[in-house]
Image (cartoon, rainbow, N blue to C red; front, side, top):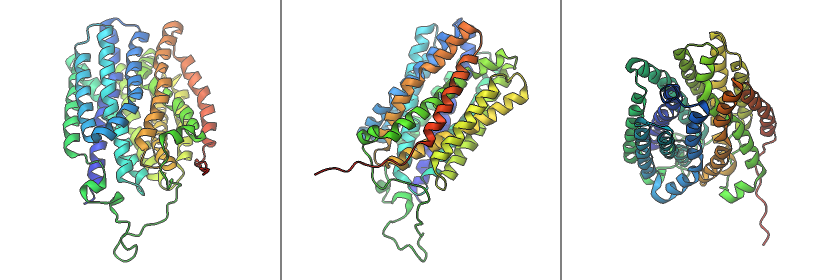
Length: 416
C-alpha cells in the first residue's frame, strides 16, 4: 500500500481537528467571552488578530523547523503549544491573559496545520497533487461544519464557554502524539516512490501508464529568493491578502453581525457550520478539478463567489439570505484556497514549497491581521459592519483582475 495515503489521511484529520476546533471554535466562543468579560468588540477582535498574526509570522519558522527537526517533531511541538494556549484561554480572567492565550494558540495552530500538511503532500504527491490538496483542505471545512455547532451546543448545555478550551486542549495533545507516531517525511523513507509509482517501471502492460499532465507544473524547483522576485508571487500575494482578509473578518464577526440583524444566536453559529460543509465541497471540488483545469481560473471563480456571499451578508436579516450567504461564501473560499495552495507548487515546484508558502503566508498575514481589528473598530464607531464589508468588495474587484494577470513564471537566464 502506498504510504502517502496514510500520510494524507492523518494530515487531513489533523487539519479537520485543529482548524475546526481551534480557529472556528474561537469564533463561536468569542461572543460569550465578550459578554462575561465586558470587553469591547475592538478589544476582543485584537485577540483574534494576535492569533492570526502569530499564525502567519510563525510560518517561516515552521519551514525552518521542518527542515531541521522534520515534520514529526514539528507536529508534536505544535500540539503541545495548542494545549498550552487553550489552557491559558481556559483560565482567562482579563484581557492580557486572553491575548497571551491567543498568541500561544496561534503558534500551535501554525505548527499543526497548512504549512506542515502542504509540505508533506508536496513530497508524497505529484500527478495527484491537486486532488490530495483538495482532500486535505476539505477536511478543514468539514471541521468547521462539525465543531462550530458542536461547541455552540456544548456552551448552551453547560452554560460555560470554558468547556470549549478543554476540548481544544485535548485536540492539541491528540494531534501532537499521533503526528509523531504516524508521519514520514518522504516516500524514500518507506522505500517507496512519489505517487507510489516507480518512474523506471514499464508504462504499458500491467504497470500504471503515466499520462501527460493537463495543467502546467514546473519541472524545476524555484528557490524562495527567486519566487519572491517573480511578478506572479506579488499577484498571488495581493489576491490572497484580499481573500484571506475577507475570510478572517467573516469568521471573526459573522456571529456578531447576524445577531445584530436579529438572527438567533444558535442559527448564527449554525451559519458557520453551513459555511464549513459547503467549504468542504468547494475545497474537494477544487482538488478534483485542479489537475484538469488551470488552478488560476478556479481561484478567480472562488474569489468571485466569496465576494458575492459577502454582498448578500450585508443585509442577511432573513434565514434564506443567511443560507445564501453561507453557501456562496463557503463554496467560494474553499475553491479559492485549494487552487491557491496547488498553484504555488505548480508554479514554483515541490522542493521548496514549505519555504515559499511560508513567505507568502508571512506577507499576507501581516496585512490580514489588522482586518478583524478594523472591522471591530468600525462597528464600535459606526454601529455596523457595512464599511469594512464594502471595502473588502472594492479590493476584491481589483484582486480578480490580479488573478487574470497571473502567468507561469519564467526563470531568468544565468549569464556565465
